[in-house]
Length: 286
Image 1: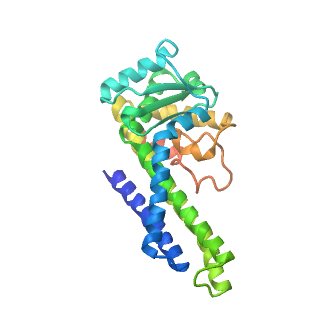
Image 2: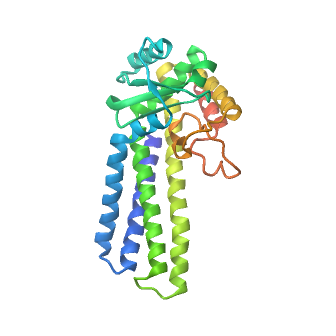
Image 3: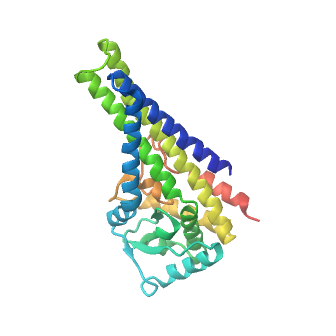
C-alpha cells in the first residue's frame, strides 16, 4: 500500500509540474493560461492512448520477439501455466527474444492484453526455480498494471519536456512579456531543469514498481530466495553481455537494465540497486 500511495503521489507531482509549466508558458506568451494548460493535458492524453494501444507491439518488434507456442517453448509455457494457476492471473502471450543478454520483460495495457518475454540468454543460465521467480516478477507487473502506470508517467514527462522547449524557443524568437536577457535566462533554466526533474520523478516511479514486483513475485512462488539467486545471475550476465541493440528508453521494462551506463548511471537508474533488491528478497525468506 505504501508503494502504491507513493506512486500515486509521484504521478500527481508530475501532473502538477506539467500543468504549472503549461500555465506559465501560456501566460508568458499572453495566451489564455487555462486554455494553454488544457491543451498540454490533451496532448499528453493523446500520446498516452496511442502508446497504450500500440506500445506493446512496437516494443516486441524492436527486440525481434517471437510469440511462441507450447510446442516451441514447453519449459516456459509450463512454468507460466503453473504461476497463472497459483496467482489467478490470465495467461499472457509468451515471447522469446533472440539475444544472449539474460533478461525478461512484460508489456501490454492490461492483464487480458499482456505479453511476457524472455531472452534466449536467460533461458540458458537459470534453473527452473530461478526462471519461475523471474516469470512471477513479470506476471506481478501484469497484475499490478505497471505498464499503464509507467506509460502515464512517461507521457507526462514527455509533455513537460515539450512545454519547456516551447517556452525556451518562443522566448528566443519572439512573443510574450519579455524583458530581454533576464527572461531568456529563465526560459533556458526551465528548459534544462524541468525535463530533468520530470525524468527523476519518472525514474523514482520505475524503481518503486520494481520493488513491488519483486515482493509480489516472491509471494506468488513462495520462494524469494530463488528470485534473489536469479537476480545475481542476471546482473552478472548483464555485465558480461550487455544488450548492444535496443533503445535505452526501454530499460525500465526489463527486470534488470540490459544497457550499461556511465558515471551518472546511478542517479538516472531505472531500477533500484541490485544488492538492495536481493537484500529485501532475502529478508522475506523463511
